[in-house]
Image (tube, rainbow, N blue to C red):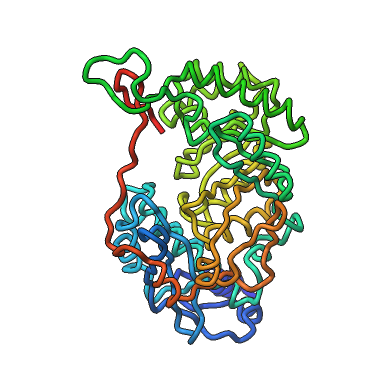
Length: 442
C-alpha cells in the first residue's frame, strides 16, 4: 500500500471512531454493538413537580423512540420554583441531541451558562443526567449499576436516624428501636440540629433588644453532646455504629474541642463540624483528633472536593447526588476519593425523592470505596406515585434488577400529591442565633 493510500484509510477509520458530536459516522463495531437499534434523538424535556410544597421536581426526557424515556431527580425543597425555568434553559441546547452522548451533554451543559457551578443549575443538570442514564439502561435492558461496571456488593447498608428525643434516655430508646429494625449504623441527635446547645426562651443573661426565643451556645453544646454519647454507650455498648451531624454550628477551635471530646465514644463519623468558609481548618482538625470526619454536603462541584480528598483531610465524602449535577460527576468524585482512601456517604434526608435515592443506590452498588448511605423512607402514597422506589429492608437497600434506575412515575398520582402551586418561589431557611443575636451558620 502506498503511503498516501495508507494515510487516507487511517484518516477514514479515525473519522469513523471519533466522529463529531451529533453526526452519525459510526464504526462497524459500534453498529454491531447497537444491534440494529435506530438512531435516537431527544424530542422533549419537561418537569413534573409533586409532593407537598412542590418539594420534588422530576425531569422527564422523551425520545424519538415511542415510549422510551428517562426520569431524573432535580428536587429542591427550599427553591422549587427555580428548577423548571432552569431545565427549560438547558433544553434549548439538548433537543435533537443523541441521548447516548451523556458525557458530552453533561460537559457542554455545565459550561452553557459560562458562570457555572451553582446549586440550581446543578439540579437541573442532574435531572437531565439521571434521566439519560435511566434511558440508556432501559434501552440496553440493564440496570444502571451494570453500566457503571457491575455490582461490588449484594446490598447497600444504610444508617437510620434515631427519633429526635430531647432526653438522654429517649435517645437510648431510639437507638434500641433502630437496632431492633436491623440497623447497625445509627445517627443520634439530642432533638434537632443544634440540640443540646440551646438555651431556652427567657433564660440566660440577654442584652436589651436581643433574641427572645431559644438561642444557641457552642460551649453548652460541647458540654452536653459528649456526655450524651458517653451515656448512650454505657447503655447500648459499642456494637451499634453511631454517627452525629454537627451542622456547622461551631467556630474552628470549638469544633476541634468537640471532636476530641467525642473520641472515647468511637463515632463512625462526625459530620460537617466545620462550615464551608472554614474548610482549611480541616487540616488542623486532622492533626488534633482521630474522630472520623464526614464532609461536606453543601459543596456542589467535583473540584471543590479535591482538597478534602487529596490531602486526606476527611474519612467520608458526603454529598447529594442531584446537588453535584447527577450520576456523571458523582461517580468521578467517588473515583477520586477511592485513590486517596476516602469513602462515600451519600446524603439523603426526608426532603429527597425516590429517583435520587435510586441513583445513589446504583452508584453505591458499583463503587469499591462505598462507606454508608443515608436512609430514606417513603409513604404508601409516595410509593404508589413512584413504582419501584427503593425500599429499606432491615438496614439494607437491595438494588433493583429492572432496566435503568428501576423507578417510574405515575403522573396522575404524583399530581394528587401536589399541595401548592409549582411556581412557589421558595422557603426562607430560619437561622439559629446566639444570645447576643449573632447569626449561626447552618
